[in-house]
Each structure stands twice: as structure tokens, then as C-alpha cells.
Length: 452
Image (cartoon, rainbow, N blue to C red; front, side):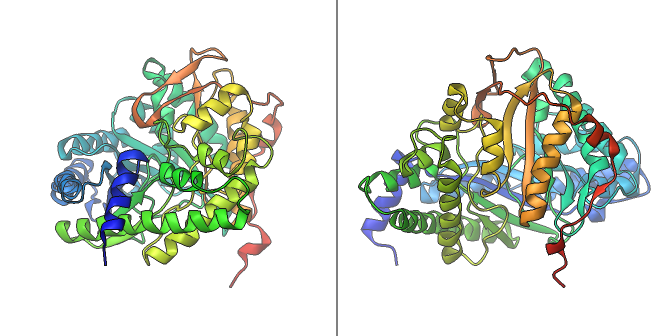
């Protein structure tokens, strides 16, 4: 039962600590839109998205007004387009264009699912769709793309890894007049979840219902504020307890919003993703949580341990609050979207190598990192391979979203604006991995994949 203390505490979290629902994302299956005629398929895709999503934005706004809880983004994810494209054929970019048109008509912030799942090899149409990503992302505004190149069960598709280094570089080049924004809308995954509500990696997995509502909560500022009330000599296990209790409260709010949205829209509730998703706002930073735990600067010694504690406590608190926890759920560490990470990168304390170590214990991976324009395709591919290996061996989701800064010098910054923020060009190790990447083939699945 709610009492006045709970209500006032929630109001304080919203007004002072940047508590919000980061996104309500409607997942829509496009499998029934396939046709042997591309024009028919595209029309069916457009009609279905408008039919299913016509009330999504309005419903989100109604819930915001009812509870006073900010819902920052309303989004749509769809079946990986490669699956529909394989059946329907034609020009893959036309699918991206119709997704963009539908997103604008419905009024959502982003639409995800211009995607391909190639962790065990390429099916019909996969390579053609992947090669179309640079053009698709440069000619659309709201479309996001992802490619899953590995999993714990299948290993890592190194042929796909090799291709994606080129695709990321080309996507940045084709959107250089827009701060290389195309690369910021492209994610390369290992162990991609089918129910992720966060962009740019969201897609509606083939094992999902025809339509579903997934909710992504947030609240780094709330966790930091709770920890700031602890004495500096409080033991570390007490720090964990405070984070767990705070994550519980945040997730309960997400559960409330998810149930309400599900009922109003008449579609099942999928998952509550309790990831701590930072923004460039002051006080809404995962890095600042780590510093509240006791670090001088995020990226320094102790960072990986502090992040492991944070991620674990968030998950433990969240699963007590909802039986629908899924997606990624933990702590994001994007550089350009987190003011504390941006500051640490500017100081040179936070490096790509340290970020890679941190990804072994957090929710995703190397996220929103600006790299020099002269970074070679093979180097980008090797970064992807390293991150995929962490995910594969540890049975967790990892991802790479790096942005080659075309036309920007080292020491300067890309500025995307809004939630995507801004960030400095970070140094990349120039030692060449070219021979390894050109080998192609497949890194075999690890022994722990044999669980049957």
C-alpha cells in the first residue's frame, strides 16, 4: 500500500534526481508481412506498424500525466528486417525507408530492427542487408540497426566481424555532415537479447509474441543520491544493500508503468529492463555512482570492482520488484551519454582498454565511443571481436557502438545533442590485427556452451 512517505520520496526522485522511465518500446512482429512481392510486403509493414502503434505515444503521455512520471522515449522495435527481406526480396533500403515513414507517422523517437542475426552464418539476404546499412542509416532519420555476430552457443562469426568493421566506417563516412550520426544508430552484438527496449540495439525477436510492450527504466541519479547519504566509512556490503533497495523502488515504478501501458494498449506486457541508463544531464551519471562509492575518477583503479558491485546489486533489487525482468538489466556505460564518463575521458583517466575491462561486469559493452577517423576497418573489427569474446565466454550480452569521427581531429569532440550527448575522440591502439581479421571463419563456441 502507498503511503505519504513513499509518494513524497518518489516526487523527490523525479524532481531532484532525474528519475524517469527511459522508454516504453512496442515490439511488433513483421513475420506475417512477408510476401513474394516487395511492394506488397512494404505496404503490409507500414499498415501493421500504424495499426499496432497508433496509440503508443498518446498512451505514454496519458501515463505521464496520471502519475507525474516522465517517460522520455516512446519507441518501436520490429522483427529483424533480414527475415522479411529474405522472403520478399527487392531493394533492402526500401524497408528502412518504410520503417522511417511509419515511425514519423506514429510519432515515436526511434524504430529498431533494421537488423540481421548471423552468429552462426549467413542466411539468404543477410549480406545484402548488412551491406545496405550505411545507405539505409544515411537516408533515414529514426531507423536503428543491429547485427548479432556471435553467441555463447555458436561462437563468433569472424566473417561477419570482418564485414562490420567496414560497415561501421562507411556508415560514419556517409553521415559525416551530421556528426557521423549513422554509426551512433548501429550496434554489433554478441548474445543479443530478443526483448531489449533500448536503442540502437532493439529488435523484436522471432520468439516474441505478435505484439508486446517492453519498458526500460532508469535512475542513475537516484542511486547516486541514495549513496550520498551514507557515511564515507560505511562498509561496502552496506553500499550494496542501499543500491538493491533503490533498484527495487525504481523497478516497481517501471512495473506500474508497464502494466498500465499494457492494459491501455491491449497488448501483453513483455519485460521490465532495469538498466541504469545515464544521460548527459548533471547528476544522471553511472560514473558519478562509481565515484560516490569511493573512486576519485571513473576509469581509475577500483572501477571494475565498483561497477561489478553496482551491476549485481541493481539486478538483485530489480528481480525482487518484478517477475518480468529481462532485456539487458544492469548498468550502461556509454561515454557520450554520461557526463561523468565524458569528464573522465577528457582527463585521459578513462581509456578504451579500461572500458573493455568494465564491460566484463556490466550490462552491455563498448558504447557510444568516438574513435579517430584514421582507425582502420580491421582495427574496428578486432575491437568487435574482443568484445564479442567477453560476451561469448561469460554468457552475457556484449556490444560495440563506436563512431569514427570523420573530419574531426583527436582532441576535438563530436556533439550529437539530446540523449546521445557528446564526447571526445578517444585514442585507439594502432597495433595492426589485419592478418587475424582477414582469416575469417569462426571462433568455436567455448566449452561452457555444452550445457545439455
